[in-house]
Image 1: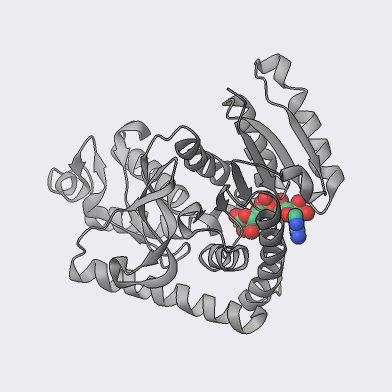
Image 2: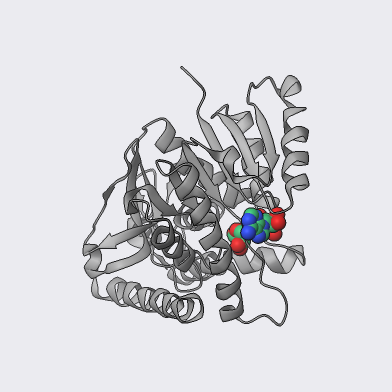
Length: 317
Ligand code: APR
């Protein structure tokens, strides 16, 4: 069986980490694309030079020629600009929407059958821009946010309970950012819901509320510490989990920014919901019943996503 081909558009911090993980997990060959072709080529060569030590066979190349991504099975997009001091959210939307429109053209031309994972922020708007500009089927275009948000939530819960991260599952809904909705009653330790654990005296409502807030602000906490740049190890690992589920047809249930056409009462937006990812891309949107409080938080989050999209439409059409 021929190796799978994975295109990484953007060879910055996340792009480089993605390539390294793809090599270590032997998920396939890698083509890195960046406007700075030398950076893409340099990272590809550097990582390949680690392959004899780590014992993986992945071919990696890098450059700034879109034709190299032809026939890719998976495309992961991190191309874009970071938010700089003094830059408004709308400035960032306009700049990155322009980048994503160019990337959409490249993907549409060279690998229209690929499964595409968008990571560039502001995520919920950028993934819609990509889908609209590329015309790829919505089930083959997803945004990475929920896996990262729920991974942060799982870590903080595991630390609070003093248990392995492996035994904690967490459920998040909504947009990526401070309006995300951590669903505490669907988050568990070995199947025991968090509200039951509170009743069992393992934690308090106040502590769990603080964990939810820390999760929603998880990206900002890292930005503050790094001072230059934003999180990249956990975002890369999260996108790899999604790519792996597609490539191996694992049908994992993962929270992703998925295109909704009526589910959860939303039509025509990308919002974070649990989905099944398999060889067909997003094979199913998992729709759960929300209580009044959760519904209100979800609606608020969707309103924030809508506002972002309207801003991006006004700015880039
Ligand atoms: N085409 C291809 N690559 C581009 C383009 C473009 N039009 N414009 C910029 N790039 C490249 C930059 O040259 C840079 O190498 O995108 C890369 C972005 O890398 P970093 O600045 O290191 O950003 P990173 O930390 O990888 O995050 C990328 O993901 O989580 C989000 O908010 C984050 O939007 C950001 C994105």
